[in-house]
Image 1 (cartoon, rainbow, N blue to C red):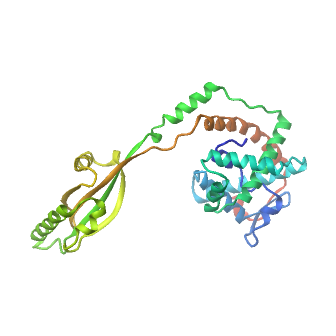
Image 2: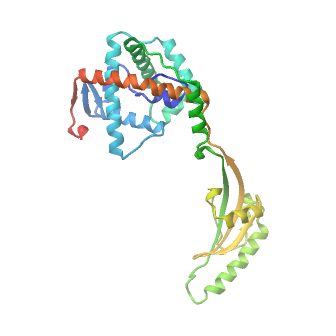
Image 3: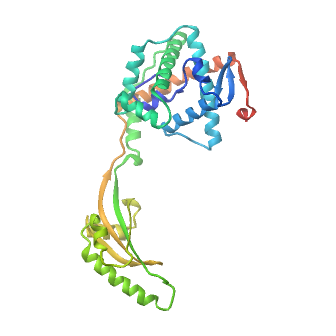
Length: 321
């Protein structure tokens, strides 16, 4: 896979393509597999699973995720050994330039990228090792297959239109609602109706004092047992039409109700609404994705050959299940 400006594309190879010592660095973690005498530990697999979480693709059960992570790390060691054999290591300047591209593709800088990695339990040092090894492996692929991957602009346009027209990327109107509850004690007894009427009167008093969501607690002054909930954000398309219409009519800072619930009387404060649009990929990002996809065909072919020649020994029987 070639490195592009996409953070996800750049990280879709292993975080642990590095010097062999990196795989054995986690003492006491338990060796699962050795690949050409280099150990892979539970720690290495855990880190790969965290990386998959960064990419937003932890698919399947925990066991399935772990199996995929282990096989990916095995591939990493195999790639590393082959790259080292031909001394295809890039220099620091090349690595720095690639990491800067990756950060820019994620709308951040190198420090921001390091923070993203740290938050997920990975590190910039690990990423640098990844970049060095993957660049080296790409050089080997180019030498083996004389690869020159190109993507037709029409193909890029087609994929771009397909992705950007996905309904999941359309703007969503989010309503912010505040629940105000006035509980009725012993709502099931003979005096329930009178109790509910009394609380309805409290609700009317509260409505008069309510001047927007920021005044919710102050408006409850002098009224017995008013429970102010947390502000809730709801997709406007999923709110029942009558309720949405009532909120729109009340307007930002308004209040609707009271309504009777099983446990008492409820009011809804309308704190406002906003439109949220998921970030759409750029045309350049789509091009990178398509190039990576085509390049993967060659990488998979080469990896099959390398795996046939590698000595893989499972130390933990569960790792093969």
